[in-house]
Image (cartoon, rainbow, N blue to C red; front, side, top):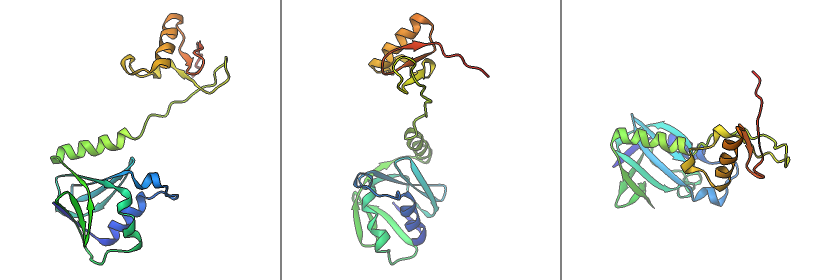
Length: 183
């Protein structure tokens, strides 16, 4: 399995995924490298960047993002740069980095990329101030997940709302109320 891309594209991809303030916890996050439709795709923690490339690569390689950071300081010599997966390791020039290979077909690869990106982006819930305790922990009852996935406080809130026809409740104190919505 191999991918060949321009050295500057490789360095730009690593740099784009690097946050402004690099913490140790970010360096241990999993980076996924995949290849689809003549593009190499780098994903880490919901962030993605794509660069044009050629190669034979039917799956994912998962490795720690921090292992690629030294390439930003000591740039690879070769251009174009060849990334190979050999014996459970990624080979970039003379460097060999421990990695995990996940074999997929091209359709599975696209679906997995989409799932990876969408799973790390939770829906934003607009919380409201509770009239009872004053904390910003009130939420619309219909935004609660399905009953099988509710935690204890969400289940208690759902039961209270069912008994009172309330449409909003507080996750902290359990107070439920009817929120009037005007259009």
